[in-house]
Amino acid sequence: MATKHIAVVPGDGIGKEVTAVGKKVLEKIAAKYGHTFTYEEALIGHVAIEATGDPLPADSLEIMRNSDAVLFGAVGHPKYDNDPSAKVRPEQGLLKMRKELGLYANLRPIKLFDELLDASSIKPEILRGADILFFRELTGDVYFGKRERIEDGEAAYDTMIYYKYEVERIARKAFEAAMTRGKKLMSVDKANVLESSRIWRETVLEVAKDYPEVELEHQFVDAAAMLLIKDPRRFDVVVTGNLFGDILTDEASQIAGSMGMLASASVGDGTGVYEPIHGSAHDITGKGLANPMASVLSAALLLDISFGMKQESLDVINAVDAVLKAGFRTRDIANADTPADKLLGTDTIGEEILNRL
Ligand code: NAI
Ligand code: MG
Image (cartoon, rainbow, N blue to C red; front, side):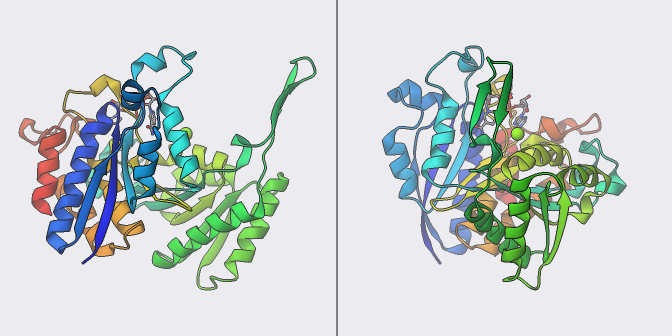
């Protein structure tokens, strides 16, 4: 039995609707296992700008820093999407949160539930059983290197830069995860061409000495992109840089069928942040149509990674699986064969998940 304090940061749009379900799942788990979870809400994004003028007010950050984990929704509002010149913007809150909390590792599990085999555009016989955990480095690479327009604006460059310490800390996290899974790790780089990838590979090889039980494989990013859809089952834990990870995880999201199914964790020096990969989805906001499973599975990641509660986390994943097995669907994962009485909304499918916990 443990006592934990959780910052609940719903943000904007469907962020609020799905985080409410994720929080209920945490409450249910606490009751079932006799844990004491306390919750504190904080503002971020458009709602924070409206209330305070700041997309991440200082007291929100303070609440997150003083918590054991953050359950986050999404930020965004159509107002800013149509006005790229707006100086104060919701996503500034998100980037500042990640930076201030020192979150350098983005974990994206790509788990395909068997019941959703037909929701993907990839053939079922190739997909069945795919279960991948990506570690995308989040604070280095070409996103943060020196960039410039030169030669009177006729040319531009960006700098792909990696420090050994940045590679080492994320490699270590990936090896640790590999130890708890299939003891297989794939490191993705472009070491045949890029010097920053050579330092990446050298550093991963150094860290590997501490994990002799883990079978380490190196792939070049172009080959990895091809293998991901040719044979997704050969992937288990993958570690890669910021740019390659950005591209490969978007590609891999298609393995799971819908954005509404994909959870993520951002971890590092400070409090871990757990969030769906989707955004605030203005097109369905307020309609009760959002699939809350990405938030519920984010809560499962939170239990596992920040609290070390493996069984509790597994219970949550199993509850989602059971709801899918029972045939219940939200609109994003339904098809023409889904009977009307199995087609549920955000709260009603949330109730089905809670019932199975
Ligand atoms: P989005 O992820 O919000 O939506 C893309 C499409 O997927 C929409 O058609 C939406 O209805 C659907 N969708 C997303 N999540 C769903 C769910 N849980 N259940 C059912 N359907 C779901 O991306 P979009 O439309 O490009 O951006 C909307 C806003 O969200 C923008 O303001 C954008 O800046 C922001 N955004 C925020 C992110 C974050 O907070 N991490 C990430 C991506 C976008
Ligand atoms: Mg991306």
